[in-house]
Image (cartoon, rainbow, N blue to C red; front, top):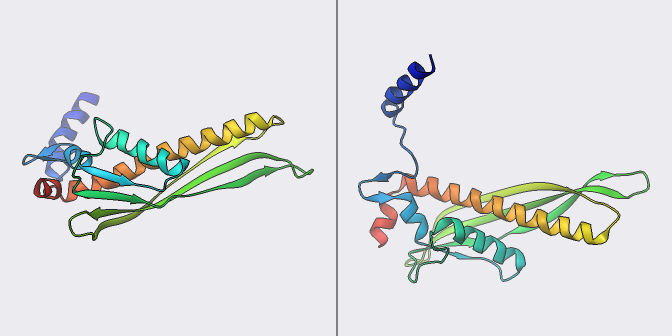
Amino acid sequence: MRLGAMLLALLVLPACGFTPMYATHNGASVAADLSMLDVKAPENALGRALKYNLLDILSPSGNPPANAPYRVELAPTLYEEDVAIERDADVTRKNTVLVVPFRLIDVETGKPVMRSVARSRTSYNRVDSEFANITASRDAQARVARDVAGEIKLQLGIHFSGNPHVAGAAL
């Protein structure tokens, strides 16, 4: 039964126009397009975490190319929300939220090619130890930065899969 369903899916999916996002099409690939991006972020701890998380997943080397045809500009906003508040006003659980509007800029023209927003939310428990609370907060910030970097990569991949000629023409 399962084998029949899998064979049917293999026959039907190509007929509906489905193609894997990271497949090579006419010599162009989304992975090659993504590896040709530079990233610009604010010069603070959150900006650096976002930038280097994103570069690590965009490029096999984790470094931007010397003459990148496109630049991703990030404008992150991080905030925390009190979630669980006890009767004595102690906060026992917090949410960390990261919202990152970003733009894909054509370096040659300076014009935006794409605009979007990526966001992530995570929670952590607060305890009596201030050290534990600081550590949990920093860990939550690192987790949302990784999540947002993955979301940005996905959105950029979708953009380039719909425009496979973009990086090929810029190279």
